[in-house]
Structures are given as structure tokens and as C-alpha cells.
Image 1 (cartoon, each protein chain N blue to C red):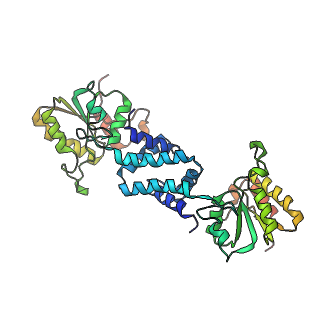
Image 2: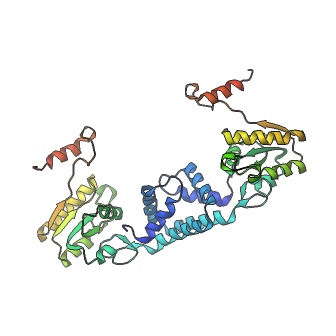
Length: 198
Length: 198
């Protein structure tokens, strides 16, 4: 035991976070000691508040402190379009873009038979209920461009097709600012496949 | 405002820590949401405890939860030797080595006229008091090998010399496992200067 107990306990807590090993944990713990007491108390409160006051929106599954979430409540948004994403962080990425004015549906994961995750384990049933009740015209499938994400998009698209709602998938291709030379074969093949007339 | 308030507050708190920018803060904040409530409460408690229950040892200036600290209290340690370091983290580095059985004195900084830090602003006066009272025979100056650290070591050494206590400075040279090719000139010159007969 080299560290006084309060420090080693704080280090243990920091080390539970992703990407933080013993060295960084030590540096952060000592930094906390040098912070003002008020700032540390705010930090502690923020941790507890974030854990206790947040929940998943009962409509779209996005993480929120009010239910329904501020996006579902916003009457100025286009209620005929739903963008399906895997994760609350994806909603935030989409919102940062400021181009999309429709609603969201957060699946909280993707179908992955290898990990035993089926459509019922993620928010697919609630999506179907929503599609029956609401005046949705287009479902944009924005799951990740991974095997699981693709499979999930494919599954939902087949499920929804009979209802007559248009399902679209976001485009795959070269990232803007990227370099053709460094693009992997699959991305390049998708970029070629998705080419458009100018 | 893309994030619900409890998340953005938690992100702000994380961003006050060194080396954590908005992206990492977001990742950590979302990770906290996925942690068990007990773990988050422990984390919050560890933060507050570390800030509130730690103090500087009234004898050596090391950070501690009991006063005097566990090193100063340990009667099995060699009380004739004091190792002078700049920072509580240096004590921990020394203790990890397990080779040193003497006491410590933590300066909480180094003399730096450029930043207006003089000997009275760091724990030099308390060191002198200690030297008068205790049965110290050797003072090991283990301040950092920087301009400020060297100046501090030099200053303390001159101050202590009349008292007849031996003052020594830890060796400078090539780090073990290092490469001569990549050593800087000053280190190499110090390594040559400090050469010893085999």
C-alpha cells in the first residue's frame, strides 16, 4: 500500500472507466486533490445526477431527463420521418449535423445472433408499435455500417415493407476529407456501387 | 443543446480533468450511465472523500489521511536519513522501489524565481526546523533534474552545510534500458561526469 486509502479508492474508481489505466488514474486522482472543493462536490453531484435522473424516452428510447424526450416533444419537427439508430450517441451525432428535422428511434443495440441478441432484445417491437400508430412515411435506417448494423437494417426493412412505409438506408462511401488511396476495399466497392450522376 | 443537461454537466466535470477533451468526456459520461448505480455512488463518494479526508502530514508534508503520515509514524524506518522530494507523487515513486527505508520531506514545489516562488513558499522552513530537532545524519536531495529542481537542491545544500549534516544529490545519468544514441547531450555529459570505477 503506497497510496493513502482515499487516493487509492479514487484511483480504483477512475480505473473502472474505459481507457484509464493505473498511471492516468494516479494523475487524475492527484489532480482532483488540487481542485477546489466546490468543483469536486459538483463533479460528485454530476455523477450521481447523471446516473439517477436520466432515463430512456418511452417513445423513442433516446436518453433523456424528461419523458417524452425533448425531440419527441418538439412539435416543430417533421413527424413523418423516423431515423433508426443504434445508440443515444448516434442521435447526438445526427443532431450536431443540424440537417435532420425528423424524429428518432434508438434501438439500444443491433441484432447479433452470435451474442444471442435477437430483434426482441432491442427496441424493434416498440418501433413497430410506433409505425402502426403514427403518421410515418419514411423510415431512415442509420444503423452502423457493421455486420450487425447491416443485418439489423435489412431485418427492419423486410419487416416494414408490407406496411407501405418507405425504408431508406444512409449511404456508404468515402468519408469527406478522406483519401481514396487509404480506403478499404469494401468501402470503395460501396462507394462505386452508390455512384450518382452529376 | 444536444445533450440532456445531466450528461452535459457530467461532461463539463470530466473536461476539467487533465488530458480529457469533449470527445473523451462524452465517452466517459455515457460509460457512467452504463455503470451500476452502486459503482457510481462509490465513485462520487471516493471523489468527496479524497478531497475532504486528505491533508498534508504536519511533519514531512506528504499527502495523508492520518497525521503524522504512516511513514513518519513507522518506527522501523531509519530516522537518520531524510529524502527531500518536490511532490507527494515522488514519495510514492520512491516507495515503490522498496529500497529506501529512511524518512521523507516533501517540498510541495521547487524554488522558481521566474514564477515568484522563493524558499519560504515551499516547505524549506519546516525542513530546517526538522533538521535542528531530529537526529538526521544525511539529507538526500531528490528534487527533479530540472533547472528549478537543481536550483532548489543547490540552495538547500548550501543552507544545510554549516550544520555538518551530509547532503547528497541523487545521480544523473542514462536511464536503465535507455539508449546512448538517443540520450540528450546534458544527460550524457552528466553520465560521463558521474562515471565510477568498476
